[in-house]
Image (cartoon, rainbow, N blue to C red; front, side):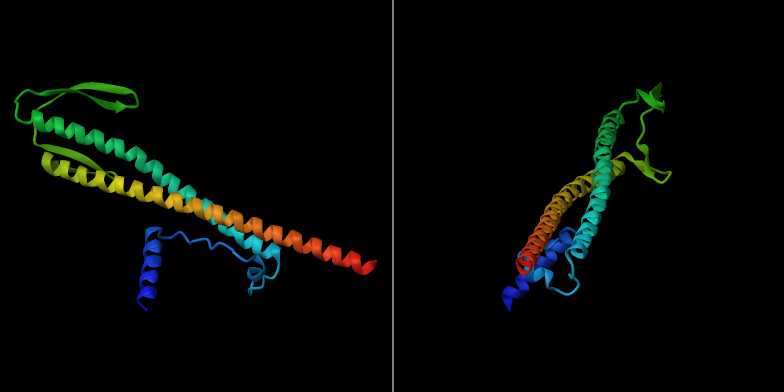
Length: 195
């Protein structure tokens, strides 16, 4: 009983780890697999496997887009944190900080920024909020940790998805080869019966 519970917990942990990605089951014995209900013909089984394969491709596309978004977001967060650290150092002085800021694509303007303890951060969806520098720094550090953790999770999900591709492709090849062997055996039997 304890072994069953432990193995079911391991399966649940794997399912939670790759949430939303169904696991492709490797077809060990193709002959018994083809005798299961719903697996009437090799063409029907190949269509099901191809449909599953296309779903995996769609999931891969979505995960790859999320990965690209996170990969571009992480350097932006790091750059913003670096600016906040610089502003933290300049907060104690009364001299204004000279900087360049982006007006439009590839168009920058020189500006003098007075020492301040407040900053505004874009949160997304056209929302900007004012924070103390310390609050902004802790928020961005938390966002950076979350983005890095999400990127690692996405990498694991993509690796898992690649394994599902491989398993599905192997299953398709095995079912196809089984069908070819079955047809050649049937043709051989028909030719023996005719002779």
